[in-house]
Length: 84
Image 1 (cartoon, rainbow, N blue to C red):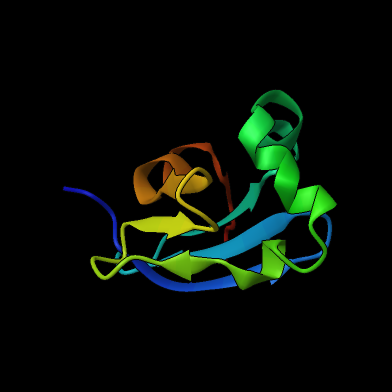
Image 2: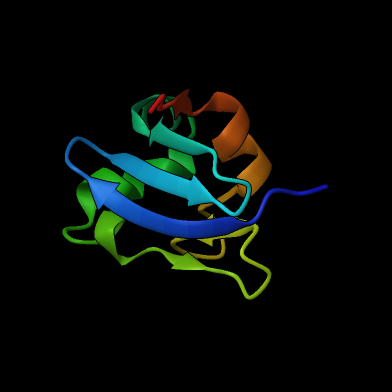
């Protein structure tokens, strides 16, 4: 089953704080993506773009443009788990 995003907030340093419907909570750091994936570099160069992400209707994808997006399963798998 594809994880659905319940809540997402931008954090300093190109990180996202994400809460999933199943209760999982992660911090996803986009710095590696920005440095390794050419299309993602726009998140650093275009002022304010990082904070203006959107989520698709199914709540399984976060995107900034038609070329810059991240699926929820990637966010959950590679995000740093927050233990409460």
